[in-house]
Amino acid sequence: MATFLTESVKDPRIVGFVTVTGAEMSPDLRHARVYVSVLGSDTEKKATFDGLESVAVHLRSRVARELQLRVAPDIQFKEDDTIARAARIESLLADVKRQDAAAAIARAARIESLLADVKRQDAAAGRGREQD
Image (cartoon, rainbow, N blue to C red; front, top):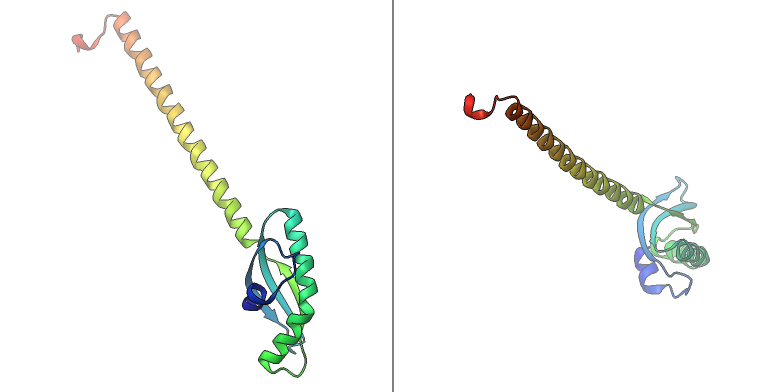
């Protein structure tokens, strides 16, 4: 299926980067659900899915012929947004890491400031380090 989509499809609406991520067949082999990930803008995704729906008829007969099926399966393309969700999670984790680093720097600066205050107070009270 992936080979057909990359080598045989000439539909100009398929403009996004398309990856077949999985497929499921019904037990009676009459229905196939093909999961695809489409990278691109929302407009590109919509156009790509429109194009995929139009090539489903050609793909249907090709699958039946290649697999020597008596009945060609009805093919439905479904969006698999796993890759996009994974990228979003990675982005969120990177943001958290940056925020944690910034918070750690702020805490360290606050601790240094407090230590400097304690040293000044000790010095002002006549209990500096030289008396210890």
